[in-house]
Image 1 (cartoon, helix red, strand yellow):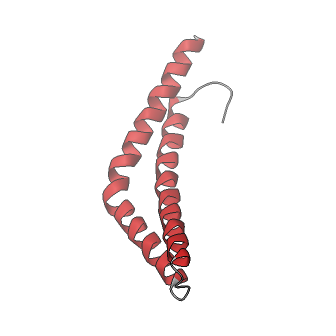
Image 2: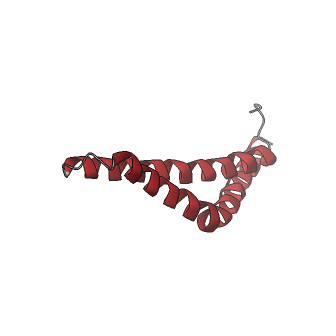
Length: 89
């Protein structure tokens, strides 16, 4: 990232952060399901449980959430960088 604020870079960073947050959420929910399953004493389905939860969140996030969250993240990043550029002027 350059030293001077650029709204286009802010939009790209905001969109990327929104997409990554959905992926991290999917992995955390899958990990939580694995921990819950292992504390219940059934170790046989840990990997399949993790895969199913992560796949559900990736598909749901990819088709339903990402089209809404990514433009919001891009808009927030753009506005933030634009405000930062005005503040320096």
